[in-house]
Image (cartoon, rainbow, N blue to C red; front, side, top):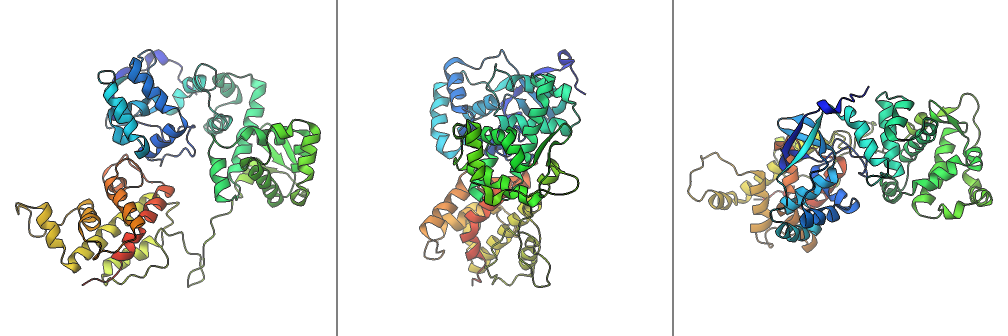
Length: 478
């Protein structure tokens, strides 16, 4: 399944501006095609020693001995499959505004120090596909030559390869371990999938989702021990990874308790060193010990699919309302049918499942609300005078959303546009800051940049940051 004729893959120098960080990089907390570029960079800087790599480049230049491995996205753009930390370092050195706000000044200093040593283009090997590049990437990150992925990252990668149809022998060979070791690694992948599917407290869920924070080896120790398997009803299986011989809801509750204890560091590998330690720990959990089930056992995938949907409140006709991005307690006073229609539509779309649609609707709503506010208060004339000083725009021309929001937040006196100090500071950052995924530039990019895609968490943060603004724009002004 893998094209091993690597010598046939083209080598070329590609401008750093045409390289995209990989949104499916296993190092990320939640690898997803929807991950936004600045958010990826921010997480890599936080967890991936990108600062150190940047300092090395500044001090010694960019080593040309190892090429980046990329895949062609079309339109002259490429996604980096191998070398994301180096790419992030160069991007931040070349353009410090790409770095998180807290790191921007540091990269500005490094950029000045590294004049002449920061490359504008780097040597790349263009893989024919993401799948074809897997053996190279695995070889680098599951062996000792380069910083190893965490057990969670390796487990994620194994499960992805299994889903793509790779055999146990191929995965073992590519990852550099013995074939008989595959079963345990595959069980790790399925164990983590079950942990990720649990209904956990938000702070615990956040820890479990982060391979750098969640001590997966503790959970491994429980599941791989004789005592843990008997207590949970776990049975190793070559095809399914695990089969579960206890009632599914009971099992999920019991596993959730163990996962929570691991996340909150109430149990560690040190506290479970001996058999007696394991028995004592599980004995203290007797209130959640799962009951045996009759009939056929459940597979690990079957357990993972049991994740409960997010609870929703029933609406007026008795059906469940979909998850909406807009606040439920906001009352629209503006008498504009189109705005009312957009609000009704946006409230019917689940932003977690349809982030692209909701991002477009939310941006359109802000645009219309801002225009209505400026028009009804007569301040549109002031803005037009400001942005069209020579009077060259046509009579029906309207400013852009960034122009309108910056004018509203920056130029209208506080007495006429009352906001709490903290809300105003948040909105100032929203309209000015171009270095994070929670800003006006990012929201605008969803509409105008085909390479920028929103994710649900990003939309939540944008909605929360703009909520005070929306609350005022909802009002009737004259």
